[in-house]
Image (cartoon, rainbow, N blue to C red; front, side, top):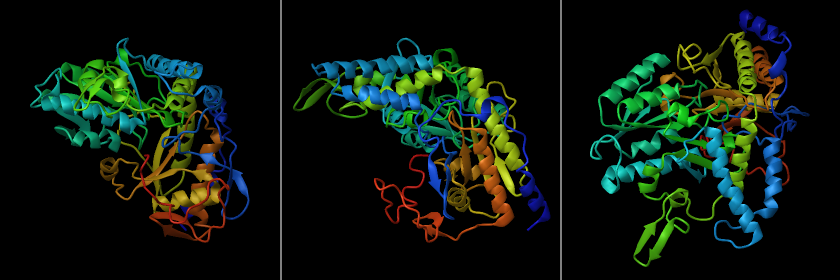
Length: 480
């Protein structure tokens, strides 16, 4: 073992006490004291550093679910008292979410399954309009294209590939990326600019207001994938000129299966309904249908009332936070982790933009992407979980083009914080990686169904969640 690695691995344990905000969670979350069994025996407090994939429920949101669950019933057409309450909860959730996002007064709020569903819904509307089934402001229907960056999550990339589209490779700085986007917009024929609000891989924030202004200047609209931005930063759609915005409840401390699409009503009312079914219609004949307008046009079938209600409650909880305290909590945790990893030789922290921390209104949310020299990312993640009780994400994060441009085609590791994170979480991860560099693996690991797992693992799941053999690597990157 290199002596420099050994020296650094031992010194990271000595660190200053966490000061102020980041020493404790910002909000209580469900499962914060969950005990994780270790492969070597015993248990430890589970350190959840995978908020960017799916965040735990805030305790207030979980309690709210208990409040409304007895009233759950059919909505919109039910005459019973419980149905009336459920309808009120569901429809009021739209206003709560709109307020959270600073939406315009006439913006449509559509509840979906998740961000991916929301962006596919919008893509369907844009596609039908470009095909001549309605009117799109800006470029002619025959030549309108969607413009997107190469750094997007697949949810904000794949839906547009089915339409006339153009991609732009992000630069090595925010400033150069904006220049490249403007060059493409100036070339004409762009009807919609699709961008992420914050990278799900590195956490770097994009200047969405500036991007929106560029899009509008050249006759295009903008849609923002806010799956990562909404849980970490305040958003004001009207102020920043955002035409459409999508995010998921499961990343916003409301993991109950709801997402949302918010935006200007004209395209949504003219586009083909996302689902064909009951509730989306004005009138149906055996051979024809007249579709309705408004949110119902795209919400056919029985809606996820509980998911919408808890998503709305989560936005209220976050809205009550002091914005400066909220941001400082994450920035302190992120800085602590980056500093700790930076002391370890052979560990590299990855980022996209050289000016991410200096460009106005950018910076990074609580996401850190890194790799450990000489170790497969999946093996490191399995080791951290089994031997240290630390949960991180590994792989390509449903952003394959971005990982390739970072030179990480085989994948990397991602640690992500949220309102339930604490300073000890960052320290546990640093100590775990330091121990790996110092001592190596403490257990044998094998690949099962495409994923690294401990060999001869005798740990058991709870009785109500049996461990199904061969599913350790099922559906990689299905959620992130």
